[in-house]
Length: 222
Picture 1 (spheres, rainbow, N blue to C red):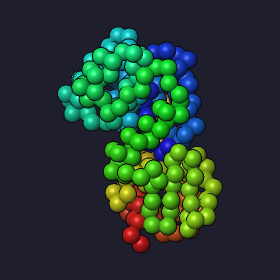
Picture 2 (spheres, one colour):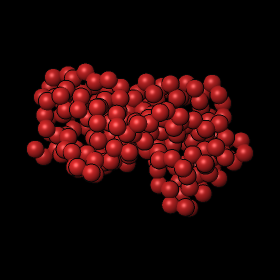
Picture 3 (tube, rainbow, N blue to C red):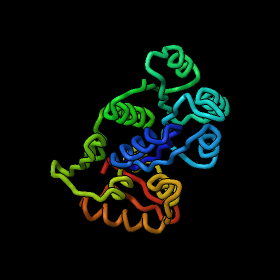
Picture 4 (cartoon, one colour):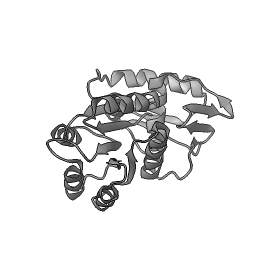
Protein backbone atom coordinates (compact mmCIF):
# COMPACT_ATOMS: atom_id res chain seq x y z
CA UNK A 1 0.00 0.00 0.00
CA UNK A 2 1.04 3.46 -0.27
CA UNK A 3 2.65 3.17 3.11
CA UNK A 4 6.16 2.22 4.15
CA UNK A 5 7.03 -0.82 6.23
CA UNK A 6 10.24 -2.11 7.82
CA UNK A 7 10.66 -5.89 8.04
CA UNK A 8 13.21 -6.79 10.73
CA UNK A 9 13.79 -10.53 10.31
CA UNK A 10 17.10 -12.43 10.28
CA UNK A 11 15.81 -15.54 8.48
CA UNK A 12 16.59 -14.56 4.90
CA UNK A 13 13.98 -16.74 3.22
CA UNK A 14 11.16 -15.56 5.48
CA UNK A 15 12.26 -11.94 5.14
CA UNK A 16 12.14 -12.26 1.35
CA UNK A 17 8.67 -13.85 1.49
CA UNK A 18 7.40 -11.10 3.78
CA UNK A 19 8.86 -8.38 1.60
CA UNK A 20 7.33 -9.83 -1.57
CA UNK A 21 3.89 -10.31 0.01
CA UNK A 22 3.88 -6.75 1.36
CA UNK A 23 5.16 -5.27 -1.90
CA UNK A 24 2.51 -7.22 -3.83
CA UNK A 25 0.00 -5.61 -1.47
CA UNK A 26 1.26 -2.20 -2.54
CA UNK A 27 3.60 -1.31 0.34
CA UNK A 28 7.12 0.08 0.07
CA UNK A 29 9.33 -2.30 2.07
CA UNK A 30 12.80 -2.12 3.64
CA UNK A 31 14.45 -5.11 5.32
CA UNK A 32 16.87 -5.41 8.23
CA UNK A 33 18.67 -8.67 9.04
CA UNK A 34 19.77 -7.77 12.56
CA UNK A 35 18.88 -5.50 15.45
CA UNK A 36 21.61 -2.94 14.81
CA UNK A 37 20.50 -2.40 11.22
CA UNK A 38 16.85 -2.20 12.25
CA UNK A 39 17.64 0.38 14.91
CA UNK A 40 19.66 2.47 12.45
CA UNK A 41 16.85 2.44 9.88
CA UNK A 42 14.17 3.35 12.42
CA UNK A 43 16.20 6.36 13.52
CA UNK A 44 17.06 7.52 9.98
CA UNK A 45 13.97 6.63 7.93
CA UNK A 46 10.23 7.20 8.35
CA UNK A 47 8.03 4.11 8.63
CA UNK A 48 4.30 3.61 9.00
CA UNK A 49 4.66 0.13 10.51
CA UNK A 50 7.39 -2.28 11.64
CA UNK A 51 7.24 -6.08 11.43
CA UNK A 52 9.69 -7.13 14.15
CA UNK A 53 11.12 -10.58 14.88
CA UNK A 54 11.95 -10.81 18.57
CA UNK A 55 14.87 -13.20 17.95
CA UNK A 56 17.13 -10.82 16.03
CA UNK A 57 20.91 -11.12 16.33
CA UNK A 58 23.16 -8.31 17.71
CA UNK A 59 20.25 -6.55 19.41
CA UNK A 60 17.12 -8.60 20.16
CA UNK A 61 13.69 -7.38 19.13
CA UNK A 62 12.35 -6.90 22.64
CA UNK A 63 15.26 -4.62 23.58
CA UNK A 64 14.73 -2.63 20.38
CA UNK A 65 11.02 -2.29 21.04
CA UNK A 66 11.51 -1.08 24.60
CA UNK A 67 14.16 1.40 23.51
CA UNK A 68 11.97 2.76 20.71
CA UNK A 69 9.00 3.22 22.99
CA UNK A 70 11.20 4.75 25.66
CA UNK A 71 12.49 7.33 23.19
CA UNK A 72 8.99 8.23 22.02
CA UNK A 73 8.91 6.31 18.71
CA UNK A 74 5.23 5.43 18.40
CA UNK A 75 5.13 3.71 14.98
CA UNK A 76 2.89 0.58 15.11
CA UNK A 77 4.87 -2.63 15.69
CA UNK A 78 3.73 -6.15 14.79
CA UNK A 79 5.99 -8.70 16.49
CA UNK A 80 6.80 -12.19 15.24
CA UNK A 81 7.10 -14.80 17.99
CA UNK A 82 7.86 -18.52 18.13
CA UNK A 83 4.81 -20.77 18.35
CA UNK A 84 4.04 -21.66 21.96
CA UNK A 85 6.27 -18.95 23.40
CA UNK A 86 3.49 -17.29 25.36
CA UNK A 87 6.02 -15.42 27.52
CA UNK A 88 7.41 -13.74 24.38
CA UNK A 89 3.93 -12.57 23.46
CA UNK A 90 3.35 -11.16 26.94
CA UNK A 91 6.75 -9.46 27.04
CA UNK A 92 6.21 -8.06 23.56
CA UNK A 93 2.82 -6.58 24.38
CA UNK A 94 4.12 -5.21 27.69
CA UNK A 95 7.11 -3.78 25.82
CA UNK A 96 4.87 -1.74 23.55
CA UNK A 97 3.94 -4.01 20.64
CA UNK A 98 0.59 -3.36 18.98
CA UNK A 99 -0.05 -6.95 17.86
CA UNK A 100 1.73 -10.26 17.32
CA UNK A 101 1.78 -13.24 14.96
CA UNK A 102 3.17 -16.63 16.01
CA UNK A 103 5.45 -18.56 13.64
CA UNK A 104 4.67 -20.38 11.48
CA UNK A 105 1.85 -18.21 10.21
CA UNK A 106 -0.26 -17.79 7.11
CA UNK A 107 0.76 -14.76 5.09
CA UNK A 108 -2.89 -13.80 4.69
CA UNK A 109 -3.23 -13.46 8.46
CA UNK A 110 -0.15 -11.28 8.74
CA UNK A 111 -1.34 -9.02 5.92
CA UNK A 112 -4.77 -8.70 7.56
CA UNK A 113 -3.15 -7.69 10.86
CA UNK A 114 -0.94 -5.18 9.06
CA UNK A 115 -3.97 -3.59 7.40
CA UNK A 116 -5.83 -3.47 10.72
CA UNK A 117 -2.92 -1.77 12.50
CA UNK A 118 -2.56 0.81 9.75
CA UNK A 119 -6.28 1.55 9.81
CA UNK A 120 -6.22 1.89 13.58
CA UNK A 121 -3.21 4.22 13.47
CA UNK A 122 -5.01 6.43 10.95
CA UNK A 123 -8.29 6.45 12.87
CA UNK A 124 -10.29 4.25 10.48
CA UNK A 125 -12.49 1.51 11.90
CA UNK A 126 -13.83 0.07 8.65
CA UNK A 127 -11.83 -2.12 6.23
CA UNK A 128 -12.62 0.23 3.34
CA UNK A 129 -11.23 3.74 3.11
CA UNK A 130 -13.63 6.40 1.83
CA UNK A 131 -13.23 9.93 0.58
CA UNK A 132 -16.37 11.37 -0.92
CA UNK A 133 -17.21 9.26 -3.95
CA UNK A 134 -13.89 7.44 -3.85
CA UNK A 135 -13.76 4.04 -2.09
CA UNK A 136 -10.55 2.07 -1.62
CA UNK A 137 -10.21 -1.50 -0.38
CA UNK A 138 -6.55 -2.15 0.59
CA UNK A 139 -7.18 -5.88 0.98
CA UNK A 140 -8.07 -6.31 -2.70
CA UNK A 141 -6.29 -3.22 -4.11
CA UNK A 142 -9.60 -2.10 -5.61
CA UNK A 143 -10.58 1.53 -6.12
CA UNK A 144 -14.14 2.56 -6.96
CA UNK A 145 -15.45 5.97 -7.96
CA UNK A 146 -19.24 6.27 -7.86
CA UNK A 147 -19.33 2.47 -7.74
CA UNK A 148 -17.25 2.02 -10.90
CA UNK A 149 -13.79 0.40 -10.75
CA UNK A 150 -10.75 2.53 -11.56
CA UNK A 151 -7.52 0.87 -12.69
CA UNK A 152 -4.39 2.34 -11.10
CA UNK A 153 -0.72 1.51 -11.44
CA UNK A 154 1.09 0.33 -8.31
CA UNK A 155 2.64 3.76 -7.70
CA UNK A 156 -0.64 5.59 -8.31
CA UNK A 157 -2.26 3.23 -5.82
CA UNK A 158 0.47 3.89 -3.26
CA UNK A 159 0.11 7.66 -3.60
CA UNK A 160 -3.67 7.51 -3.23
CA UNK A 161 -3.50 5.14 -0.26
CA UNK A 162 -1.06 7.36 1.58
CA UNK A 163 -3.30 10.37 0.98
CA UNK A 164 -6.32 8.33 2.10
CA UNK A 165 -4.60 7.61 5.40
CA UNK A 166 -3.81 11.33 5.78
CA UNK A 167 -7.21 12.76 4.86
CA UNK A 168 -7.44 16.47 5.51
CA UNK A 169 -3.71 16.83 6.21
CA UNK A 170 -1.14 18.54 4.02
CA UNK A 171 1.38 16.06 2.60
CA UNK A 172 4.54 17.36 0.91
CA UNK A 173 6.01 15.87 -2.26
CA UNK A 174 9.06 14.77 -0.27
CA UNK A 175 6.92 12.99 2.32
CA UNK A 176 5.00 11.19 -0.41
CA UNK A 177 8.16 10.07 -2.17
CA UNK A 178 9.61 8.79 1.12
CA UNK A 179 6.57 6.62 1.73
CA UNK A 180 5.98 5.20 -1.74
CA UNK A 181 9.54 4.13 -2.44
CA UNK A 182 11.73 1.67 -0.52
CA UNK A 183 14.98 2.88 1.03
CA UNK A 184 17.22 1.71 -1.82
CA UNK A 185 14.96 3.07 -4.57
CA UNK A 186 15.72 6.18 -6.58
CA UNK A 187 13.41 8.64 -4.89
CA UNK A 188 12.42 11.56 -7.08
CA UNK A 189 9.82 13.86 -5.58
CA UNK A 190 9.20 15.40 -9.00
CA UNK A 191 7.61 12.18 -10.22
CA UNK A 192 4.97 12.60 -7.49
CA UNK A 193 3.48 15.42 -9.60
CA UNK A 194 3.11 12.97 -12.46
CA UNK A 195 1.30 10.43 -10.26
CA UNK A 196 -0.98 13.13 -8.83
CA UNK A 197 -1.87 14.30 -12.34
CA UNK A 198 -2.70 10.77 -13.44
CA UNK A 199 -4.77 10.16 -10.31
CA UNK A 200 -6.83 13.29 -10.89
CA UNK A 201 -7.58 12.24 -14.46
CA UNK A 202 -8.46 8.65 -13.56
CA UNK A 203 -10.57 9.49 -10.50
CA UNK A 204 -12.45 12.26 -12.28
CA UNK A 205 -13.54 13.88 -9.00
CA UNK A 206 -11.87 16.92 -7.37
CA UNK A 207 -10.66 15.35 -4.14
CA UNK A 208 -6.90 16.06 -4.44
CA UNK A 209 -6.08 19.66 -3.63
CA UNK A 210 -2.70 21.29 -4.43
CA UNK A 211 -1.34 23.80 -1.93
CA UNK A 212 1.35 25.70 -3.77
CA UNK A 213 4.71 25.43 -2.07
CA UNK A 214 3.36 23.01 0.53
CA UNK A 215 2.11 19.85 -1.14
CA UNK A 216 -1.23 18.07 -1.47
CA UNK A 217 -4.31 17.42 0.62
CA UNK A 218 -7.17 14.98 0.20
CA UNK A 219 -10.44 16.86 0.71
CA UNK A 220 -13.40 14.55 1.21
CA UNK A 221 -16.21 17.02 1.95
CA UNK A 222 -16.58 18.40 -1.56
